[in-house]
Image 1 (cartoon, protein in one colour):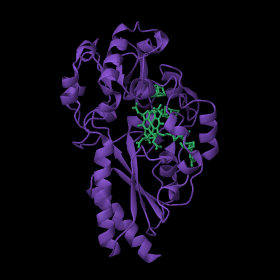
Image 2 (cartoon, helix red, strand yellow; image 1 turned 30 degrees about the vertical axis):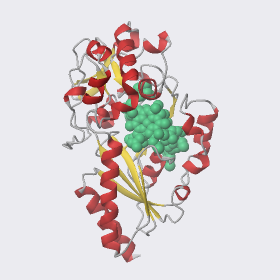
Image 3 (cartoon, protein in one colour; image 1 turned 180 degrees about the vertical axis):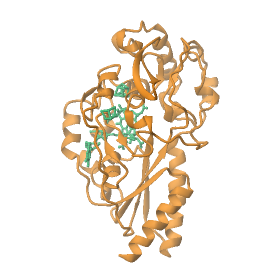
Image 4 (cartoon, helix red, strand yellow; image 1 turned 120 degrees about the vertical axis):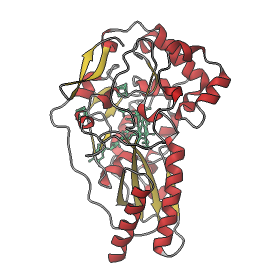
Length: 335
Ligand code: B12
Ligand code: SF4
Ligand code: SF4
């Protein structure tokens, strides 16, 4: 037990040195959430993400990914490198904050490989491990709750007491016993700001997201064209959506970070919709190298920019998040 505690401490120290904002540990036992996941899939709320249908039971079972797993190290990297402000310039494109610079999948994978080496040195021998970042079939938020990183809010986002909703999650599954953390407590109380502010009404109930309506899904995962009512709700968003995070009061107190991996690059700042809609494939490849925006592909980004350009701002798209009297609120203004 003493050894498990010492190793856990060594892992957490190393995680902080490697640039992770948060690190928690849980066992490799199955996570809760299977019924909720199955109900979500049965209702078709995963839209066109067919990969989500594959073996939902395994998503709750870390040992389906690494049979020998004893512990799961859950890390979070805050992408809160930009101040929360709404770019007011008409015609300017909005990118989700996590997409400001490097692809977090690559960044976090590399840092987790280093963490594994540190653990091997501390444990005095080889460690069987599996690195998971987003695309592995694992319920990352449920694991993060159990590892003490935060609680799941009505927006569906994991909320950390210091970093708010801005943590990007990743895991290192290992065949070593590490002292687990206690699950995190916390709750939204009576707040419903994210539900009220979502431009498409995609938060059907606390924590339940309808991907068919979610702008994040539409601008990143969806292939093909948009129905006019979908295009009409994009506002100026061309890659992802942060509305349900920007209005969250827990983010008003969230610590900003100075991680160069997430400091916005020119390609995602001060870009006009028109510029993006006309960009050629070579420019796209050049400007979004090693960026998560690649996921939308050239055709997807142009489609999003063109749709946003043609969008006639219905009532809710006039809303934007602003800071008033030190508080984040949703106000009317040009979308
Ligand atoms: C599919 C997916 C999407 C889909 C569907 C969204 C959704 N809510 O499921 C789309 C494309 C819409 C999407 C959008 C976004 N996503 Co996404 N997405 C995923 C992915 C790949 C799977 C999520 C999943 O399994 N969904 C199915 C539902 C049913 O599961 P769930 O929401 O995770 O809910 C479970 C837990 O929360 C748990 N739970 C809920 N409450 C409680 C309470 C307790 C006490 C416990 C124990 C458990 C628990 O039970 C639920 C059901 O099993 C994960 C990565 C991963 N492998 O987990 C990233 C992930 C959830 N996405 C992430 C991000 C950043 C986003 C966006 C913010 C991106 C953006 N800026 O545009 C938006 C936010 C939308 C939103 N409000 O959720 C992060 C979230 C980080 C965080 N702090 O929460 C993740 C974890 C990726 C990562 N590695 O960082 N995403
Ligand atoms: S990401 Fe945007 S569209 Fe999706 S649930 Fe949050 S506010 Fe709604
Ligand atoms: S905006 Fe309010 S209801 Fe939504 S997650 Fe944040 S605290 Fe919870």
